[in-house]
Image (cartoon, rainbow, N blue to C red; front, side):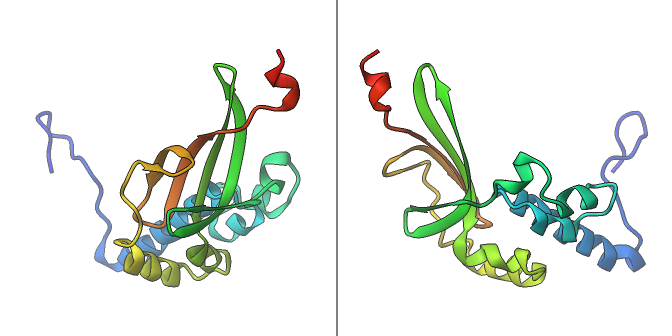
Length: 161
């Protein structure tokens, strides 16, 4: 498609490259989903050296070694992922991001097509609401992901101050 100044938008791959390009997108997507859920070394199999393959092969820094250590049941689904706790106007908050437990192991084991197929089959079963009991805002993805926020209880020493 040409713009007003004659430049072209979008991209096009030669027909002979479509299989390769499709695999590239699937692998990049799998790496992104695993990163979203807090995976570390499992991501390396999907990345080139320029994308950080060597970096993710090692558990050498905090962000890549504190991984997928949290499970939460939100609605009818158990999600595997990671969380961060922080303060928002003196309120302790947890931010959780994860992938449906049923789907998580597929990209970890390198089964990208199986993940894509199963996620597609399940896409209409995930909630579309923006809230869930015990959570504040929640964002459910059709590909089996979730991002959720909730207030954490105050510690005893915080309540008296």
